[in-house]
Image 1 (cartoon, rainbow, N blue to C red):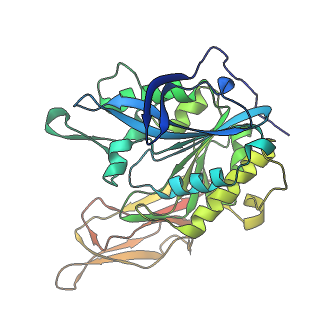
Image 2: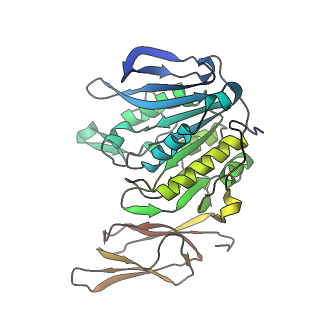
Image 3: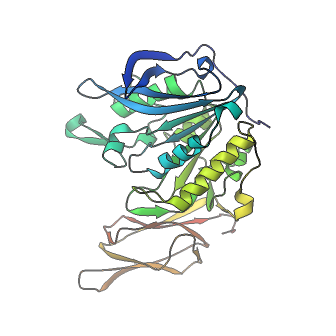
Length: 353
C-alpha cells in the first residue's frame, strides 16, 4: 500500500518547445498529470544555456501507469563521473510496464550534462577564466543565480521535479580515485525516510541529517522523502552493486503500490550495517599508499589501515583507526598527496560498530 501522499499539481503543465532531438521532443516544463496514462514518455528537458547560447538538454523518461498513484523520482548523474547510477536507473526503467502500474516514475538520466561529457565530477565553467562547480551543493538552485549550475538546478527543480514527485532516490558513486561500499545517506529521524532506506538491500547506511545544497536535503526540507545512494566507484559500472541498487529501487516501487509483486531482499535480509558517523583518515604526507584494509572490513581502535612510502621505499607515514566500525570508503589511487582521503570508517556514536 502507498504510504506517501499523492500530490499532483494540476496547474503545472507540460510545455513543449517545438524542437526535437534524435526524434525525442524537447520540453521546458513537465506536468505528469497531463501525460497519457499507460505509456512510457521520453523527453529532453531544456536546461541552462551554454556560453554560446545553446542549451544543455537532460534526458528524462516518464513511465506513467494506467491507474493513479504516487510519483517516484529516480535521479542520476549529478556528478559526471558517477555513471553506475545512470545504469541502475536504466535497468529499473527497462523492467517497468506502464499498463501494469499505478502511479508514475520519473527518471532523470544525467543532470550535470557538461560534467558527464568529460566524465568528471564537477561542472566545468568558463567563468573567471575557468571554474568548476559541485552540482550537489547548489540545490534547490536559482533560475536567476550567479552561475550556470545554480540556474540549471533551479530550472530542474522548479519546472521538472518539485511539482511532480512524492519521493526521490538520488543515485551517486564516490568520486574518481576512491571506492565506496553499496552505501546510503539517509535522515533516519524521519519515519518515511527510514522506511525507504530499510527497503534497500545495502551494505551500509549512515543516519545523516544531510548537507545544505544537496538534492536530498533540498527535497527533505521541502517535505518530500529522499535519500542518497552511493554505488561504489566512479567512471565504471560495478555490476554487483548496481544489481543491489536495482533490487532496492524496485522494492520502493512495490512497497508504494506502483508495481505489483513481492519485495526482493531488504536491509534486514542482507545484514546492512548502520552507523551515524564517518571517521575520515587523510594523508599527512605525500607518498605511495599501501592499504591494510578493504571495503566492509571490521576495524578496532589502533588497528593499522594504511602506510605510505616515498620514492626510495621508506615508510613516511602510518595510519590507524581510532574507532570501532566498518570500512566504508578507501582510496584506489596509489599516489597520495597530503590531505587525500585514505579511508572512511562507518561507526556509531553509541558504540555499535
